[in-house]
Length: 206
Image (cartoon, rainbow, N blue to C red; front, side, top):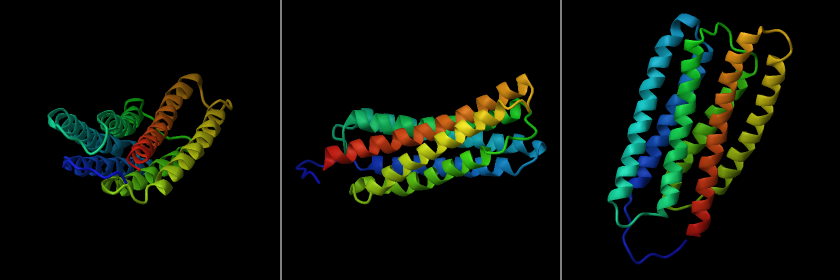
């Protein structure tokens, strides 16, 4: 690790960890939505909306700290990229839940549970990895595994699209369901963006 002669602002580490923990909360709400009937989903969406607002607050706190700090633990553009990508994950998860409610989806297609399981695992890995930014230790397995999960999410997404276009659903339902599974895929992509940013930071700090 690079030797530094100047002190660093360390509160960023705690804020990144808090953002990642909030994403775990969001992934659990996604899982809860899977097992809920239509009448319970509105309440789950409200809790997801609150979690998304908490994520926004955490992101704004990071940006405020970044703008007011003379010395940062790593490059400013990487802090901004990491905070933005973490925020994107939460935004996509909240949007997916909101659309399920707004579109009055009665039954999600088979395969969505696999998408959400991948997101839940990526959320756990991300939350475990954020505290390690302090030392840059034990991060290689994290970004390798998240990239593997994103590849898995791609395969699940393609199978879901094939299922949606097999003629079982009417055209309007296809449009609704496709938008939801596409947004869940974007959440998986955002997890990969976080992992790639962490890898970039680790390489620069080595």
